[in-house]
Image (cartoon, rainbow, N blue to C red; front, top):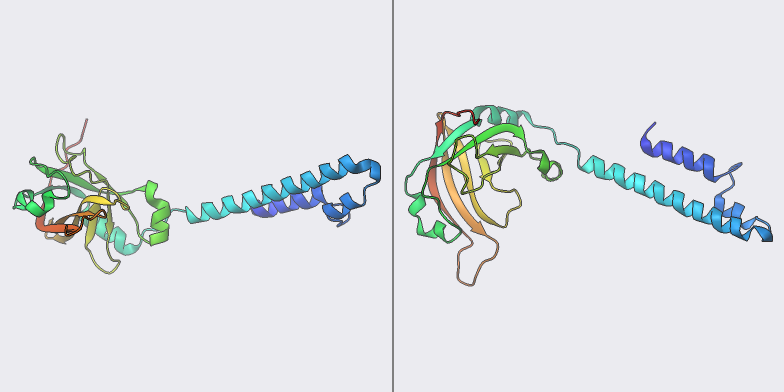
Length: 218
């Protein structure tokens, strides 16, 4: 028996006698039972509220249910999981990227994990995509400036991934990368939804993420 069915059964047994609805029972009460009528109607209202609350909670739980990781996502996660460093090949001096935030001068390092970012499960279920966790503390001292926290597969038919600070960010930086031997190649991009007249809403620069070892953080 489901939770909703159990609640309905309780409502039926407590709110009705011989299949007589509560409202009819209240109307049939004697005159001196006016208080009883109000009490019965209040009980009916309360039971109706509890039922609707139970149904809404059940639907919410269904929407928030953890999404299933596709075979393609699992295969790509196994391939790209590890630590990387963005090579200094000109992107840090790109004047267009500077318009979207501070560009770190130190090495940018991060770890792509196979751990699912559970905080984004409701969005993942809606978007039919799995969000994985990005660690920026795996390699001590470096990589925190760009604030990457999440990565996901762009298409379930390819191997291109996107690394972001948040799946719903309105501004910031991100990476669009694809496997190339043991490394990842693609672009770093800056973007904003708050665009001034005549200004760019995004800019990008080619980048290579070289695979490096993942030391254990103590």
